[in-house]
Image 1 (spheres, rainbow, N blue to C red):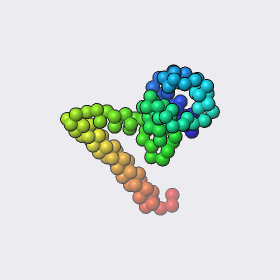
Image 2: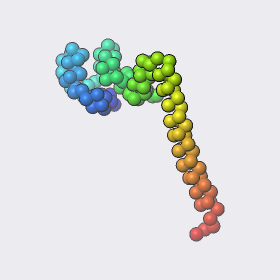
Image 3: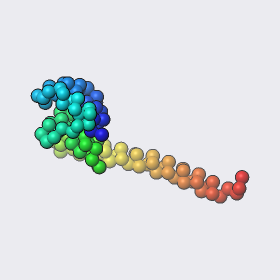
Image 4: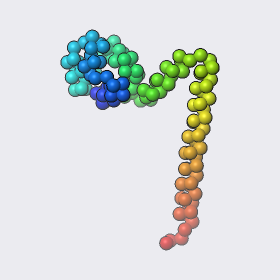
Length: 123
């Protein structure tokens, strides 16, 4: 729900609801409304997303919406020169390869155990 995502983003950025309203230049009653799951419209929603550094889709829990860390990673990437971008890509590829190996190893071990269990006669 919108209010849960809003609370999560506020906590991560260490911003209070009242401080958010102040930054937006709107009355604090809006924050109360958002906690009652009334979703802000248009420009207000866009500004909230910008201040909290999340996507509107993430706030609204849309399918395949990027997580805040993914949005931050993209912003950092875009701020880099070519050498920085190459470094980020290299590190990301290495980490992805490492993670795939861990998953593959675990899957292989689980599959081997399943095969051994199938080969055991009634015990």
